[in-house]
Length: 200
Length: 86
Picture 1 (cartoon, helix red, strand yellow):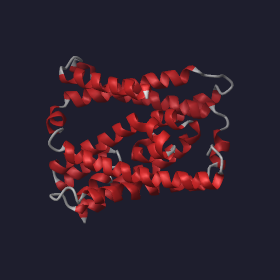
Picture 2 (cartoon, chains in turn cyan, purple):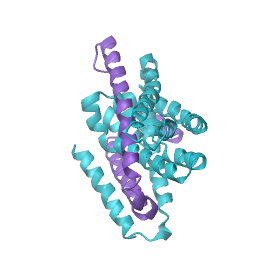
Picture 3 (cartoon, chains in turn cyan, green):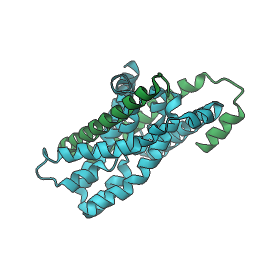
Picture 4 (tube, one colour):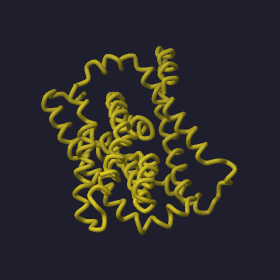
């Protein structure tokens, strides 16, 4: 819990800093955060390589874990389909397209803006950012309440890069392979599903 | 990531207890940068209240759906294995 609060704190401080433009534009934020992300991924890779046991763990991995990406996709789409009932001005395919982003907000919002306009594209951007934030902030709680697979499933397409470090922390090194496999499969589903629901 | 795996494998005889701490600091930094990007982008800030509600509903519903199925899968795996570790 303390970990989550510290993270929220950093996020809020970041928003305030952004609103008042306390950091000069010349610093190129996206570059800095990209480099930070690369450092994170490098460290996670380092931990995998450092653990000589990990290949054995992969072999012993229950094949049922391979079902997790399917659970994520079906569960997300079912949830979004139900939401259609609460949003009368949105069609079923609108909601499904936004849900198909699976947290991959950059790609899904660009695709949806192209097919359905900036309006729904913005919804897609926000919804998928929120999903990533929920994963980053809520991972420890989800592990406690719903088991170690829940935060990985919520992470969607981001579980092999952006949210991998926090998931490694919350779920333990044993599930890193599951997380990477999950992110890999869901990642590839995003462009297909978004395009599919936009063109129906 | 591949570079990290190779580096970690080459140094596998050493213990790196500080890696977890460094990982945490980098996560904080990343969240801070995400916040800065949201704060600097007027479009995102202004549309937060309008389209934000729709977005929030959709993400919560999608999250809930995936949690439900992931929970079910987790329980079925635990039942088969009977052990605490995957």
